[in-house]
Image (cartoon, rainbow over all chains, first blue to last red):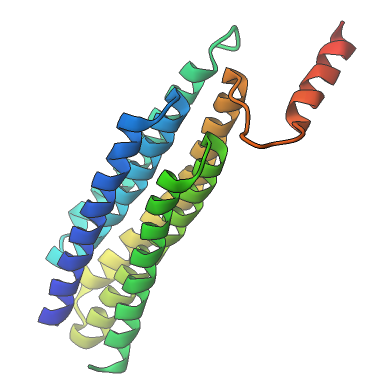
Length: 90
Length: 126
């Protein structure tokens, strides 16, 4: 059982490396839509790493926070998309 | 290493591989639409496998120790999976739609069916 906990921590470390790599797309992205794609990817990876952290520490609270984070990041993405669309659609 | 533990390790490895592929795709593809395709599909698939890993792990602990908190954790992870499945594709669709309305053209594309449909609609209104 101890080995599996260590394994989860290793997976979280790898996910953190992925998140840092995704951050470069936010800085580099030629258009605003590219930056939004990078942000959306980072949000998904953060939800995944939160769930893995919850399993590693045996805290159900972390998984509840992951659910709320997923829903809130969805609302954020929708609002950014609405802003990028612009025009009179409002 | 017992068989259930091996199963959990394999699920975790699948999730890490697919998340990595999504991250690479985000950097290697030429325009917004292909980047969205690579990043959203691969990271959603990978994160689904992370939730599967946690469900398998906590179910195993529940069978071994018979404590209620492990079952509680499995059910909460299932709800997280449902939230992820509902929100992720919808967000990606909204971004793609916004990018098209901004006027970003797909690179190397020969024809654009959505733009033709929009023009047709405009003509009918006029």
